[in-house]
Length: 124
Length: 124
DNA sequence: TTTGTATTTAACAAGATAGTTAAATATGGA
DNA sequence: TCCATATTTAACTATCTTGTTAAATACAAA
Image (cartoon, chains in turn cyan, blue, orange, green):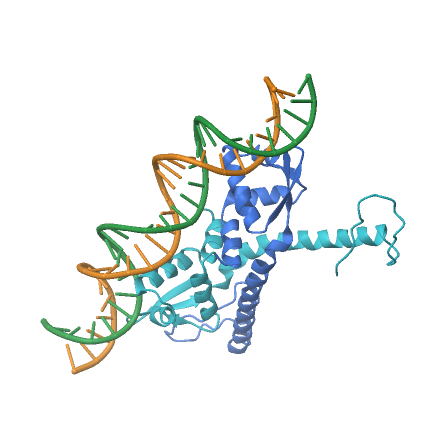
């Protein structure tokens, strides 16, 4: 699977996002991460594997514990991808905005138009 | 499924991302969108359903065609989520940066340290 | 109303996902 | 060495995903 798909796939699960949220406050062991969930340890362990494979967390061994750390860099590609579209839709709003300003320069509502469909009006 | 999971899930497929990419250049009919893919029309139709359910595209009917439009607003929540972590990891870099500046104030490489592990050094 | 084009729905199969419990592995300490 | 703790792997199951083909639906035009 390509990297981007893998990242988005990893993020498409609330348990995994909760794990990342927890890790944003500092490194944690598997047991600590599993504690709040109503789910077996092996299940959490596999979620951690998914996150590791996606490059979103790193794990280091300390005695019998595996310490998990958030690896923000793993979000880079996904962030870039989504930002491209964010720009796109903001641009759309700008265009719409400009269009509405051109089309309806006066904020006064015209009631004269005979028959035709109602003109778009801004909500915000 | 929660909204965020649904959005990320929708983005976790290269075909669907390609469809969004195409739509970023303008509205398209189902047939137009399906054309470049080596995949049956029903398959594409279902991808479009996933994107629609996730609020990432809108569809309007024009004669026998269904026109699809990108709906950037649907990415808002996902974008916000990911941006939070982007800030987090950039902050981490800042901290690392500050740490390295404190630890190694002189850019001169010290070759005197006896034995100890090599000190971290910046790459960028 | 018949026909052709555009698209969706139904029914199905293969493979992925996410959970379970039980067993295996790794490490520290008595 | 033997035991307790931490975590992963194995084996299994239920459900979801994604693709296929065939049939159904929607609309325009002849």
